[in-house]
Image (cartoon, helix red, strand yellow):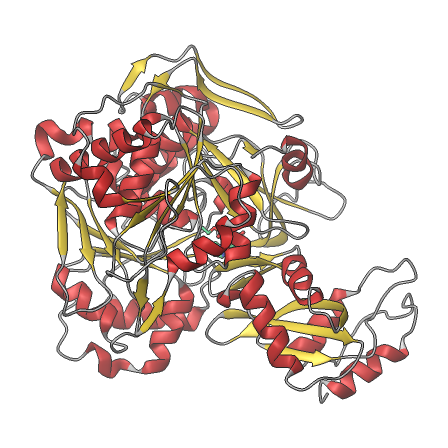
Length: 628
Ligand code: WTA
């Protein structure tokens, strides 16, 4: 595949992609293996919306990640697995070995009756078997739904039920740092309420004792031992669903973002190669979990499509100490390192002594993803990790976009700290004003929309196309609305300013305020609650909850935190909770979150117009309770 190696080449590729998008993406698609050529390269409208790339074509993502490389790269390392405990053994899988494992597991799934279009839920730690399970699903045309293994039993059950998964794949347990998480126990609790699940396959990760439900539960190794290693990949329609990934929105239950096969494949393959300026034989490390989209697109599919070596790390950045990341970069001679600003800020706070004795000279490119990176963290990353000679690609994208949309191209785009810079080829961003008009020119700020389809974009929300339309295509007619605000500076560079809806980004995790409120309201003593985000030095944003209760109890604040952990997962626990007598509501009953956000930030100098409030006095009372 052609790589963009100069700024002029980028400008040219960008122009081509806007003037002749179908030709541009067809040329990219031709670098992949198709069992049947497509009939039309693009059909689309943003009103239904209906987006089809390469309709009529047939391909297989697993084939393109594995079989396609066997002639030249069979003995090349595909995955390096670094366990949580640095004293345990590193595992390496070559392309040939990974291919065999995937074929075997594809056979296991087929032997259990999994067919094209069936949903398979993957609730796994960061071990190669998670990747194997995903690739095996793609191989046989089953739709995987990976659920981050930090989610609670309730959240897991909700996700399994929303898409009626037939199989759940999990592990006995995992250590994260020195904490043991008993995944199978959580899965058991979830499965009490999941009638669609026929089998639960358990990967023995830690030799922990687990409860086995006869007929339903099967051990991964037992199944793999008795199965053939030959599996022909199933040719999949370019628009056949590939995976579902649940993500949070402003309101209601999590949304099952749906991606399809052909467009997603070529988009992540193309963007991986170009954004990171990946060179053959390089070692790529993305620290994201496979439970999030970054793990899907740039830990597994993007690197494997390009025959790269990708690292899977089971542990956490600060175990056994805050030098773990740098030790791993040295140990595995990592060339490209891709992480989140929250990790950078957390490690920055631990000090530079953790770099001592670690050789980071293998690093060539650094990446950032998941939330805006503040200038200070950018500089620290650039100077200390990158020794002032590695470009940082600040990659802006979303679960819904499938791959990176706005980002520098490493070594090509002139950098500007805290700016995601310019759109990638094929991406046509616009900023919108409150009246729904495009804002022309530079040095402007507005709501970020995209006005033309790109191959990697989500096609629907699983089982709810109308919600898909309303969420993304209704705010602005004929535009995809991202939910983010952005500014475009004098040079036309984009800086993403953050969400403009009620989504909070905590340590790069997207959390809907409505979801947290629902969880809090589940407590028997809670009448109502309102949740907002506030600026947090390490996490980017923290969660602040204002809660109305019926009666005071001991440990109530603790209990509320616990109920959020239990219903959503520990990562969604509110940082701060205050008990309030009322909430600032308009006469029509809408909570004015703008006011609560200001209070949460500790800045009440200008609360704006409060005249439309039903009871302006409540604001004074909340301010007093917040100590302001
Ligand atoms: C935010 C993660 C600023 C943004 C890939 C977006 C960013 C949401 C950046 C999507 C970035 C992601 N700069 N903000 N480089 N990358 N975001 O779906 O608000 O987990 O809408 O996808 O994260 O989060 P998601």
